[in-house]
Amino acid sequence: MPFVRISLLKTVSASDKEKISKAVHHALMNEFNVPLNDYFHVIEELDASQLYYPESYLNINHTGNMVFVNIFAASGRTYAQKEKLYATIAGSIAAETAILIHDVFIVLVENGTKENWSFGDGKIQDITHVKS
Image 1 (spheres, rainbow, N blue to C red):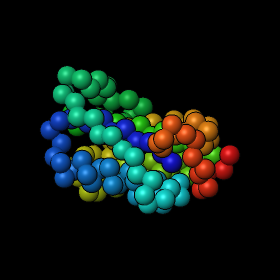
Image 2: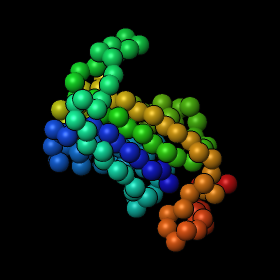
Image 3: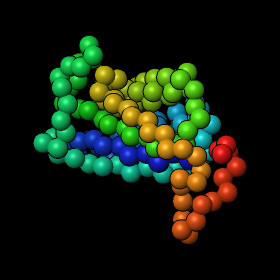
Image 4: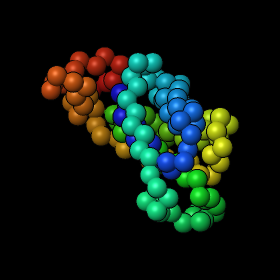
């Protein structure tokens, strides 16, 4: 039940935006066992003047084409699952678009379990694929 916000330049094509979103979702399905229809993404298009980052950080060089992926998910995944998720997302985006793997910045925010989510109707839904 992740919620994903992807921030990137307005100049990224509609086709690449869709590929980026699908790359993130497929990685979440494969690495976090997220169901196919659990697909809630917002793509935020920004001007270059709205994105700030260093040219190099932790020996990773960045270009002018950064993509920021912020994933909000329930707690409970292992270090290994997270590591594989990040590698899969960045690798897929780099393989399917002009975005370099070095320019994919990912933040996972865990916010507890299902009582912290409402998918509509102003209620906490009975979500069976997430442990309480």
